[in-house]
Length: 103
Image 1 (tube, one colour):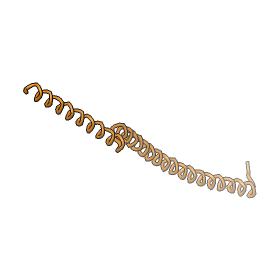
Image 2 (cartoon, helix red, strand yellow):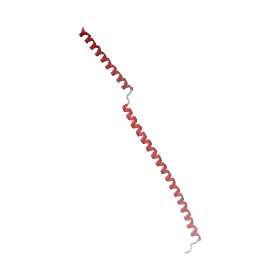
Image 3 (tube, one colour):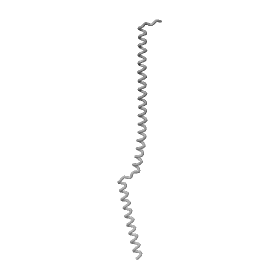
Image 4 (tube, one colour):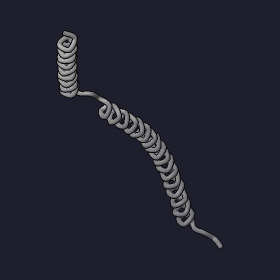
């Protein structure tokens, strides 16, 4: 079988086109692999950030539960002061009763 020069030229042209397409596709695959790798790094970074944020949130929630606000502190002080005054009054009354009974 003999092939004409035109057929050989067309065939070699198609082979060159296929080779070029193959190189383009390899480069595209390489670029896509790099993008996937970069996105995987981003995902890991975001997971780490999310975990740290959840930990911080849990710590803040715990601290908020334990926090004594100024209003609570002031109310507690007033209550303690009232109790101290009541105890002082009771002591005074007891002392007076004791003095009256000794006379």
